[in-house]
Length: 174
Image 1 (cartoon, rainbow, N blue to C red):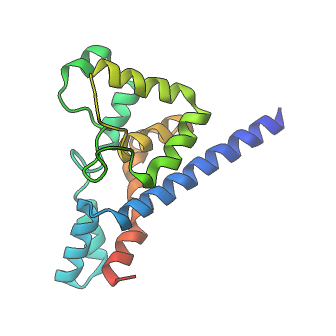
Image 2 (cartoon, helix red, strand yellow):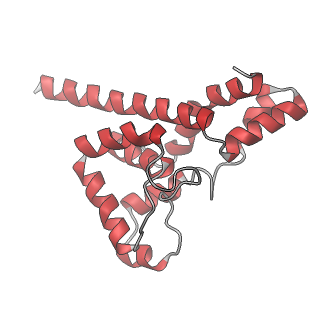
């Protein structure tokens, strides 16, 4: 019994570590809005603090809609999913033909160890008639929150925590 609990704890820690790595990589490698704004704010202010705050201010509806993705993954009814046009958690501005490579290992680990998440994602795609859009950082983060038993409100906190170093590095040219 203790071995099972230890294995589960190790699995959860690995998932969280993979998520952290993915967010940092995405912030550094993709010219997403938060990374771009961080760099612009730093260029204008010379302050990493102000740059990070500016990056944080870009999150929400379009960029990092983690709470909406969490809702779609865990709470949304089929009627709701079928009625909305854009389903938070699917699609990526940079990777149209696949999951963002930064998040592929997280997604693979998540769906391998927690097959109910994969089933729910496929169900959402079917009900909402999502074609040619792949799970994005928001949905993958929401899936991790779900299996880790964390509330949806923690999503944006993890997003910020995991990206701050990358934003700072981009500002100072590391």
